[in-house]
Length: 123
Image (cartoon, rainbow, N blue to C red; front, side):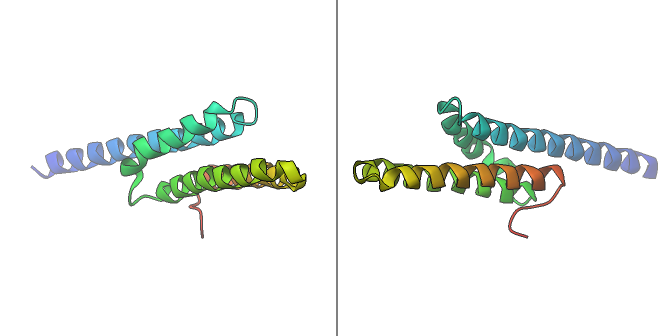
């Protein structure tokens, strides 16, 4: 009887480990999509859609902080892009857009590095 429980415990932890690995892969894919947005702009939108679709699955895990980081990166970038495009007419907008691009690149690199090291964001 105790062997049965032990086997069930092992298989449950193996399933959890496999699910965790799958969620890490999804988080990596989102960082890849964000990085690709510098070439293919729509991939940024695809990335945030994946975040929202899978958000409930990462709730309560260390990956939740990465999803929050990625979602905030998207929305703040949208905000600064809009401000930048509005200000293009007074030429300051180009600097705002450049700063936004550098900030997004920083967030992708920082997040991806923490993910590869198994660290949560905001630590």
